[in-house]
Amino acid sequence: MGLVRNLSLDLIQKHIEEFTSDFEQNKKVIEKYISFNSKSLRNMIAGYITGYINKNAEVPDSEEKEKQAEE
View 1 (tube, rainbow, N blue to C red):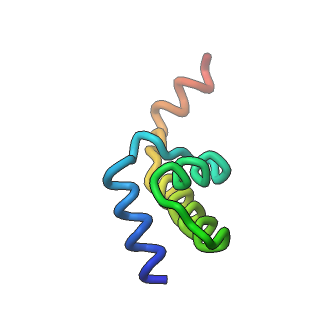
View 2: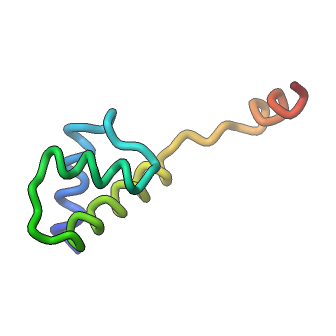
């Protein structure tokens, strides 16, 4: 798992603006920068990046949620 994590974090540092919370989109972005013979390795990296993006996405605080609910 160290290889997956290291490659994922390296790609995130270099190309953070291209990654989204969509797994399929992340697979396509990864293919632009790294050529794999292994689909499973590509998918593990895409999954790690997707989870990382979802985990670190900004969560609106309670005041913003209340304002959106009122509108």
